[in-house]
Length: 327
View (cartoon, rainbow, N blue to C red):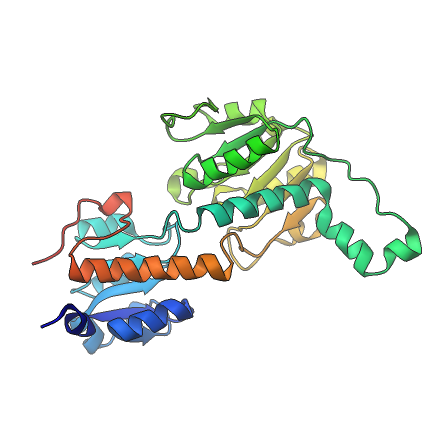
């Protein structure tokens, strides 16, 4: 029996709202089973017996895993996987993969664009032109902030953080960082605490992953340490920020401005952040280009193919590197 024929017998569960390109590849290669969303109540007896893999954006909890006793692999679409219960997956001998690297440069580009928008107020300047204010009122007001003379700090110096740091260096900004641990081979100044980093920079870019260890890590204390000239940019996860504290800091002048691509309860954005005149807000588009999303979709499916042919993943998450394929 050929590998292609073998794969066509492998049932892969795909919740709705998934990459069309990935779905097309899965449908050609495997036995693709669609489900409205990852809810164990929607699992049929056929799914329970046959499903060996899941391909999904996120949101795979312990109950969903338990509902599929033959599940071997969860191919998560995206670099972040905090909404997958990886601890339960590891305990159940279920491999979890994600899609790192292929989105690194795109997200880093977005981070820099968001920083510039936030500092120079470019979206509002464009609106000024488009709504006729340039003709009626004259030149757009001078931006009160600039990148010149700033000191940048990065919270989360992984692949994306390092790509952002390289771009900031090209802009002439000194870079420091906070991470769970110091990264070998980097010359940037390391700070063992986030508060220590915030105290010595005026531009803080968060690329930190979600999860219990980073929940509301950027809080009132951190924002106060950043200072009245401070700019905060979040391209990582909304859960890492105390959004009420951020809104208060923007309103009372504890920091100068914020640029956000991610939020704690997407797509719901707190009204205080929407109304703030010193925010630049994006609808979680960090990796959202056709080019990059297609590459992410391919890596997601390639992990499935590799697992069910070679019995190994391409990009396992750290928590499940020990998981071995079942005989």
